[in-house]
Length: 486
Image (cartoon, rainbow, N blue to C red; front, side):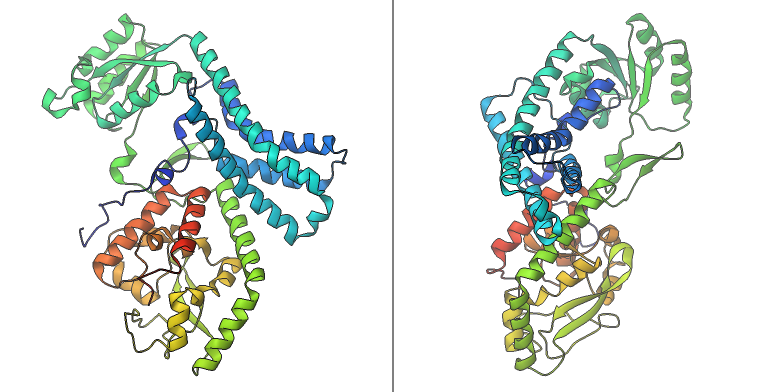
């Protein structure tokens, strides 16, 4: 492990590395509008339709709260399930895995909706049979809708004309593009081969036998073989050979695309956007945008509010224990960095005989630390000292899951030693995080901190509500056996 960077990236589990759902079926602007709409809207519309069907079945009137829950289900399913994945004639095992996956995600959404109904006055408008029927029927409807959409898209693809394409630039991103096109039958694009000026030893082995010529040969080949699409995977720069290539293609009807290799920069949440028609590329951005950000905030409020309500007796007992076991305040307030590097005040139950504000100095608690009180050792071991941070979540300073906030003094120390350290502040800090469930809860040395930042940045790259759920479950499973808590 390098002590000065975070290039060595931790292995993410399968469920996080994809992030959580097979994205091979993502929609594309190259697809017909009908396919685009089907794949994008099928999942979100189904729970709304099943809700209306359940109301009709139980002879219940359609009220405003029902519409609100329908909208929440529409938005939640759009985020949790994304778009319909395309699998050609799915095997029974794959179909069963898909059903279990849908049931898990729908179950998570139903928990949030149920808590919302219980914590608000909306619950009085919902009858038990309607809600129960809706919860049971919808995942099967989603599953059947997915299978039906897959069959429709597969048959539709078989009837379409395959478009012929070439790739200019025998590069890694070019190989990846061809593999992606081959896995997406609905796009109906077949890659004939590559054009490249570089010598054979400098190009990927997968491209050697697929070479069609040099860059000056592209225009003639496109015209002679009626090529429909030209993908350029070379640097998007005003180089003479690029300008000459584009000029030579002006006499053809082929669609031309530049394919930038964004991965070479190890970007965080890279995506394209438009600012009043001006194209921009996100180099470092928060994953919480649009509906995703709303879903994250709603889940934080529901979970923290419910936890505070359920754990109120525990909070009172711990507060009494802190007060009676040692002199000093019950709540320990420390200034730390939050979203976008802004200072926030984090609350914890006091577990030390002395407190530091975290701005001018901060000493990491170590094993057998004399500052830890006997009762403080217990609440630190069980993570009960973190419970007041639920108020931080409810307030909006923190999230349930996210990079753990560091004291201001710690930030100022390590931001100068670890490249990319401040990237972790593109999201709200969390009570628990990906680094913590992978064994990097404590440690104030450079190597430990570097690994912690590595995991934090991987969390930003792969974030989803499903990954948050995994982290919460892993946190609950290790909280009583955490060897790094002292």
